[in-house]
Image (tube, rainbow, N blue to C red; front, side):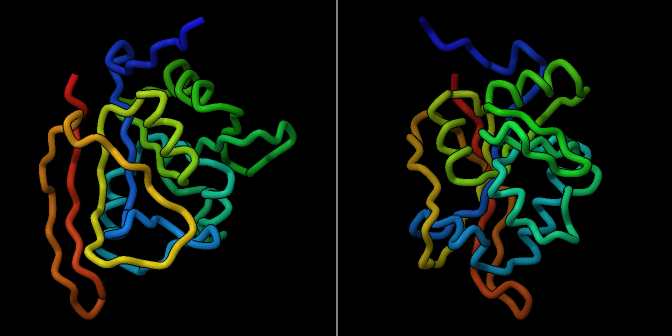
Length: 182
């Protein structure tokens, strides 16, 4: 039995992934972000606003309470726990269910997968991601959660922003948009 195809072009909707990744592929430690980059956080907010965001339960719980659910976005949480609840959020139990929910219930041209590591890995393995917005931080960090390796041959790239460290953003970084090559 083959896995159903979620090629989102059938749905007139782009499935995007958005993530900040350290030089050594680290994306977090102890269920927390390790770095503080307000300019990247603003990019995340501006890019995902008014779009549905899909995340794992641990990722949702790592968001400081005062910011959750993320405002002006449909927050969709994937969890195996059938009894899990989170006020103002949509709870689903698989990646497939999250995509189907958006397709059937929400009018959007783009949805965002916002983490964490396990969700990123599974979405990439399932080949459901059309676009990635990756903030490449030019510093290595000690962490316990990593972004999976990607095959660069499958993606075209466009640099959206380059930032040199300053008083507020203590690391050099660039933001690159990756579009799947079919």
